[in-house]
Length: 164
Image (cartoon, rainbow, N blue to C red; front, side, top):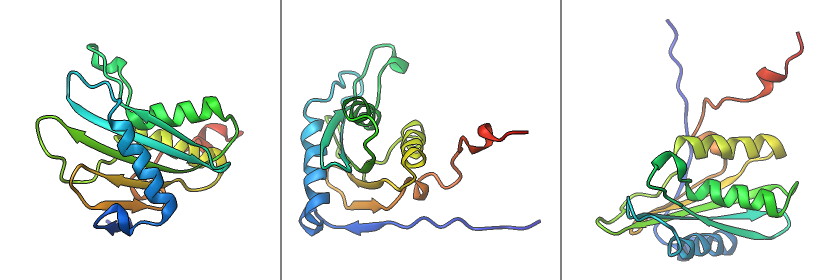
């Protein structure tokens, strides 16, 4: 048997004031977007903001549905909207923030597994990492330079494209 280790790297900040201007503005957009989330069932309001290589920012927020699988996470709403509005323009960064009605979110809000895979697809599509800026309601801020730090053993379509 052989064991191996996977290491994920994050930067941690105490407040948005410690961030560079681009990350701070993107995070502010994500926080603002939480106010428009439609979350009547979970009352867990998530906002996301995407920064594109052309400088545009696109916001999204979670959209729930009484048939839970029919809803969509803030990250995918923002990414899909950005791709629809600006086709072919690479995603540079995504910020994610959240707040809840019935409890305090004391850890950074990180993408769910499905959103991680979607972010990985955009990294692969544009052959460049997507920076992630993540914050809870009253939490530290975590920054990862690539989705690979949150999804180290991601599935890639390369295997599907091999010619036999």
